[in-house]
Length: 423
Image 1 (cartoon, rainbow, N blue to C red):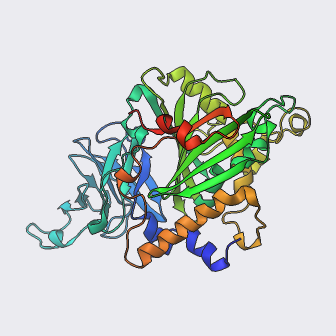
Image 2: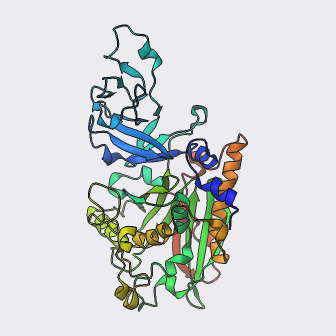
Image 3: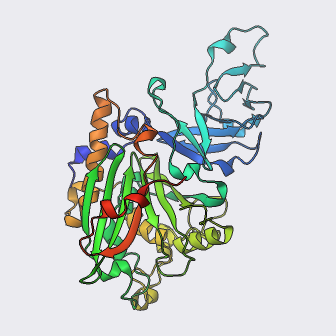
């Protein structure tokens, strides 16, 4: 459990909050690159860390991320004209470049000095791995651009998708680092007792703090001779790295890959989940057919979204289309789609769960360490220090891995060669 004041500290992400100041020390995913498909295309609204922003791709193809409202009379720039390397407010014609400089002020007399005094809030951006990233913190603390392995993989071997989730980022992320829940929530065939995570539903968990966050292993006993060990990484502030070497139920072709999520706060009560994957090596491309099959299996297929949004059709308004007969006869939850199953429980906790009312067990060791890691990082920033994982050299060579091994195998030794990046 957490004290109420610590729960507030770790969940509030707006400007001036302690966790918000921590989040702003990292490059954050702002939107998918494909949301801005070409130069001078329509701008896109972005809400990130409690701030209303606007993204646009200018005539040169570079991306700007600026305040969503014109500094003149606070008119919405979403309706602005994206033209000639700038965004022009349609209210009075004031125009701004992607650095926030006012480049034209046609409603004022020629030679006005006002133009040089007006500045639109703008954040630096970079485009890597199909994502537009931004840094929203102090300029003197800006770290090098992100360098996660999936960003370095060729386009043929990676993909990223995005899903809206109606709850605080932390309770969504905690689900990603709760390995024991997969034995229950994601049991999609009650008759199949040979599923790796069903054969032992009480995994033994080890967590080790690192320069980037932590490394985390779960060990399940399969027989007197064999164990299943899965190793994850938590990368500050909200990134999961895990291995996926076999389809959980055989419905998707087995493609050895790294994958995971980034739970990016929209505000205190919602987040965007960026779902990423990259093939393990040159022999494991992620084909369009595989991507569609895998996304559909997880509940993020092309037919799963409300058109024009990143919101799922299965949501609280329809109880995630739970099928009680399916739950009685076939699956543990009666909800289809792995990520949809997670969302039903995480969103069902309410926008921000009251962690002071929890009763934690040994299976929650990774969750406890996750919270402590974030709270320690908040304290470090508050005291003038740097949080873990801002330097790419802290994380850019790591990988996750899982395998079935003989009992009492030292996974650090056995997996050492498998847990180094290829790309």
